[in-house]
Image (cartoon, rainbow, N blue to C red; front, top):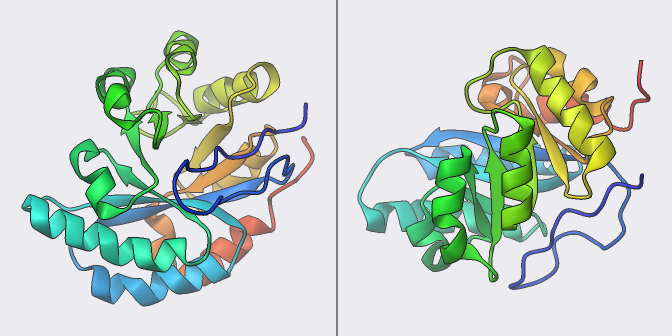
Length: 222
């Protein structure tokens, strides 16, 4: 099955060309309170691989500060035609200029869906079962992420991801919590591999971590 494209945001320029069969990367930030010092690492990481989207995780603060932080990151991400998603924070997605939001758990996803759709991307992660994945898919999720949030084991995440990649038309993402998980996730045939916040503390730098992860994309199954 040819992987479907990452769903393009319905506002602004299209972030991903239609019918693009490539596996691509999805970056997850640390929980940020200082976007200025993070900007250089982020820009370098975006240049180091084929990035479809960035998931921005924000440290707690007042709403105005959260909007300002998200806008600062949006300016870096979107100028490269990469989608910016917020980790939750449905209430500020529009004012921040983000392309959508990601939610961990079917309950959080379902609660926010009506606010985001149809104008913005709504991603569902932290899925604990095939049933959760089917519920999110039927409700209108733009993608499913497996392996983020609490895990019973990496093997279970791989099992759900392989099932989704083979049987569902909805784009699926495997979450790599460490460098060693990138290759097994890529081999499932998932449309995207998400790199956890370990890339920002990689000994060789975030750009090197992204470049190494990108080498595993498109790897055939074992």
